[in-house]
Image (cartoon, rainbow, N blue to C red; front, top):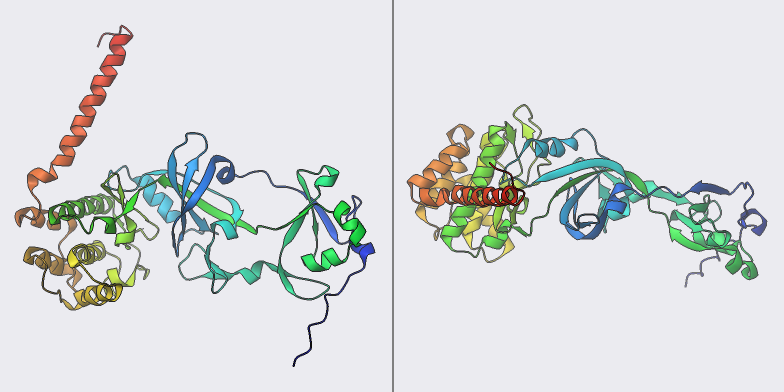
Length: 396
């Protein structure tokens, strides 16, 4: 039977009781001012987490609107690609971008943490830092601990903090005589480790693409056609998305929005990225890369898979040119062209759109429906503005 662990050592009280005078084991510093993120927004709940960041549903405290706020830890040059890509677009098929800023924030609140490994992702897909990099070692008991702080409200230091240096909470508490402990101390809190974060404010979308999988075939094809419209908008700007997949395709009130442009790049990049199941094998960045990914998404929308394993196996067969029975032959033919292993034989996005119309997968009249709706909205807006002018006696 092993011996019980030794009791926690008791450091000398005379060295550690908090006072207002300069002290060898205490430092005094003001509480940092509130950040834009903490003052302007109320975090409601996380929406998603990936190698490039974590996204939250937030409430703007001023305009009372709901937004999506993406956080990227320790942003480097690559992290700014998404901001640059989003700022290019005013497309109804791309997630709307409202702004971005960099400021310090807590890794425990905004970092992409892994509870099993105690690590959190940085702004690149290949690097992680351990939370051990942000822990301290107690000078007395030599154990590791997460840093902490004391609020000395007793002395009216509401905006100030005294922080013991290199002492765990247990050793610090043991250093204070019991009769003085309650009077000498305020509340003890774990310090929130703070590092730079890039925050990207975007429109909040209420659903992901998989939410339409149970709709009628005609509606699913209409949504897929809208995905192609968004992809065409990207390609027209010379941008390759490189990570088209269902979880990066959103719906806003039933309308398609392509998002998560963290891997978006120009044709000059050949960095190997993307999600394995949806990307071509050993291929440099090209518009054909996105076409391949869309072909996989098309089959997933109509696959009717009974399990996650079935989905992975059957979508993986696409790279070998195999599609199971039960899917419309026109859809199969189109998907096989889009996922051809030779990118020069794949159609462009515009060619896919034309093929869908020619084969009857979507009706040209149906494709014009969005334009008609937009014109109707503009007509109503013009009428509203005319009414305002008339009310103010202004001729037009």
